[in-house]
Length: 386
Image (cartoon, rainbow, N blue to C red; front, top):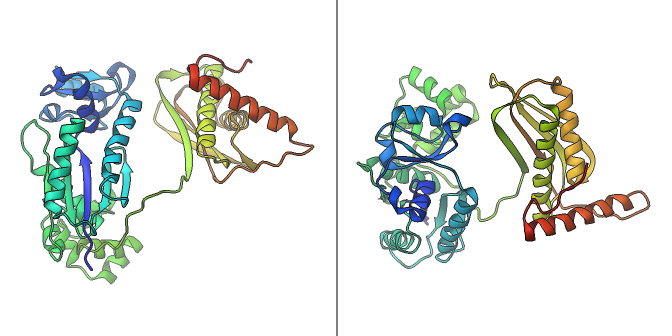
């Protein structure tokens, strides 16, 4: 039996949220992101700004060059997360089969709903617009692959400086015909490197890929060739995943200006380790592998990791390991552009109170008490002494 999958994408989400807080931004060319004098990038930009060539992930300085009158709005990620949760709650009100794939995107399996897909989609768009004041685009198809591409096609078809409010429905059995004329790089699994190789072979559209024998694509692209063959024909059997296992937790920071001071970098690592630790306990997790990420001013990026003898969720243990890794790869006074801490090898924390870890348990309880105060009164109400 054919499934019915709905893909929803909130149009220029960060900008749309900012417009609800400041209606004077509506219709204006503006971008959400970091300051241009602090090497900021565009996180999201309004449709009016896109008319000047401004795009997400572009350096903010470049965006201002393209659009001199561009208004720059600082990101408010906590607010965006809160609004995203409201949207996702609305989607789960339709069906429990919701897979959130980013802060502004989700898949829904609406196969078992009685309402006609188009009617449901238009009602959903109107509800999100009227209740949350946010625009969204929707694609509907028999699988996740085609539904997402349908959304992209609907958004690209829109003209002008207003949100697209796209709605594209691909009937079951018409997947391959819909995909055939589209550019090859719209297909999942076709990145820049694969796209260049396909072009060298005279393959420019998804339909061109579909004409090639699967065994030839496997010979040329390995296992990815098998996916290319199936996806180019509109085949995708993946189901909706309502929950995802957390693989790792991390924090990183790109500095406004390169940092050379050893103590400042160690302080940053300790603060990041404290946040990683807080997230671990919030999710009742502990990890064994501590990872350091560090980037020099020339954009060279290094990662180093170490594995602890037992799982931990303690900020002091995470911070100590991260600082040790940094000292192993960085000379004192060497400039740093970005630094970050992560932890993986996650699982439930092991609490075995015994003769040798009484102090460890005391430290953990102290940390929980400190965090409780910080949650109630603010992050700066209390901190560890040196």
